[in-house]
Length: 101
Figure (cartoon, rainbow, N blue to C red):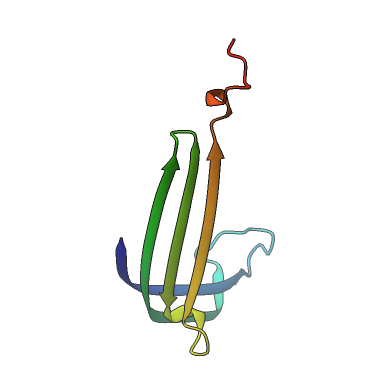
């Protein structure tokens, strides 16, 4: 599986205080804006996901997974990260020494 995504975001922050009643936490007609900031950004993401399964004698199971991600938010020094995983299972109820209930 391969994914590619481009995110664009806008953010605005307005700081204010209420001169009529400082305890009031809402921006009404008496609020005075003390600062306003905004930002715009674009980030790019690329990811790949690979998974394999193996079964032996219908009782031993192995899963191997590999994922790699590239994201512009990781920084120029290390734009890609790899996330490996491995898992196993044993269906013990299929063993001859396991008594069935």
